[in-house]
Length: 492
Ligand code: BES
Ligand code: MN
Ligand code: ZN
Image (cartoon, rainbow, N blue to C red; front, side, top):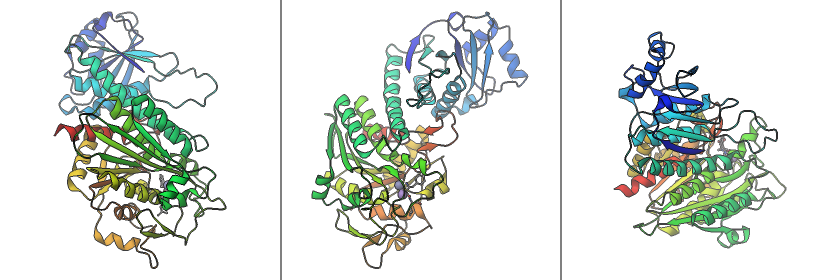
C-alpha cells in the first residue's frame, strides 16, 4: 500500500472515496463543516436523525452526486472526541478500509483529526486493515486490494513531518504483514528450512547478521529438546539466529526467542482432527521475532537485538520421540516426556538456555504455547508471565498503547509442583489444570538469573472472525508490541 500526502482542499480534491473522521458528540473538525456546507447540511442531518452517530468503528458510505469533487464520502466514526486514543484511531481506520473492500475501489483519500500521532495510528489501521493473504488465489479477484491512500494534510503539519511518519508506519506495517504472511503459509511450504531462508533473505535486505544451524550443529551443542521434537518428521530442524546491532546501542542486548513449530500434529500424542489445520500457525512466535528484527533494522533503532528461533515440525513418524522418553536438554536438566504435544517448551528450553550466553539485559520469548491460554483470554490478550516486575510492567504499558494487550498470570511457587517428575528433573506437561502457568513454570527453569518474560500468543496470533485492523487470519501479533517496547527502552 502506498501513502501520499496532499495539501488540496477537500471540496475540490478528486478521488473515488473521501474518508472523513467524525466524532460521536457532534463536535466535528472544521473540514467536516466545510464539506457539510457544500452538501447542503446533509451530514449534520444524518447525525441529528441518528442515521450515523460517529460511534467507534461505525462507518457510512454516501454518494456525493457531483456536489463536491470526491465521488463519495465514507464517514468514519471515532467515538467521543474527549476519549480519543491512538488505538481508537487505528481501529476506526481499520474498520473504514475493511468496509471499502468492494469491487472497483483501489484507492481513497482521508481527512483525519489533527496531529502526527493520529496520522501515524491511521496509517497503521489502513495498512493492517487492508491486508489480505491471496497468493494462492489463481483466479483474478474482482475485489482488488487497495493500492493507494492519500492523506489530505490541510497544511496542518511541519515540513517533512508527514513523510517521516509515513516512512516509519510503513516500515512497521511491512514487518507485521511479513509476519502475517509467514504464519498464513501452509505447513507444506513454511518448513523449518523455509523459515531459515526467509531469515537469511531479511538479513541480506536489512543488514542483519544471520546464522542458521542444521541438525549437526545442534547435536554438537546438545540441543536435545529441539532434536527430540524434530525426529518424527522428514523436515530437518533449524536453529536460526538473527542479530541487529546499532552503532549507537549501549549495554547488553535484548534477546527475543520465538517458537518455530511449522506444523504441530501433536506427535505420538496426536491432536484431534478438528481444527488441526490451524496448527500451521504454531510458528507465529518465530514470525514475530523475524518481523521485529526487520522493523527495528528498518527504523534504525539504537538498540542491540538478538532473535533466536528454534524451528522444527512435530509429526508422529517412525523415529518420533514418544511419551515416556527422557531427554537431556542443553542445560543438562532432564525432562520426562509425558505428552509429545507439549513440544513447544522443549524447543524453547534449549533456546532460552542458549540465550544466556549473550548475558542479556532482558529476554522475551513468544510462543503459541498452550490451548489453555486460548481458553483463558481468547483472542483479546496475550498471556504474560515472567520473573521481573519492571519488564512485565513495561510490556503491559506498551500493550495498552499498541493495542496488543497483555494480561499477567501468576507464577507462584506452588505451580512448580505440577511439573515435577518422579524419575527426571522435570516432566513436560503438568496436565490440564493451569496449563499456561505450568508451561511458563517449565520455561523458568531454563532462564537462570536473567530478566525474562514469556508471552503466550496462542489466542492472539490468529483472528477467527476479523475485526477493525485485524482481518480474519494471521495477526502478526508481537511485532508492534516488541518494537514499542524497544523504542521505549531507549527513551529512558
Ligand atoms: N501449539 C499448541 C498450543 C496451541 C493450541 C496453540 C491451540 C494455538 C491454538 C501446543 O503445542 C500444545 O499442543 N499444547 C498443549 C499442551 C498440553 C499437552 C500440556 C495444549 O495446550 O493442549
Ligand atoms: Mn503441541
Ligand atoms: Zn505447539
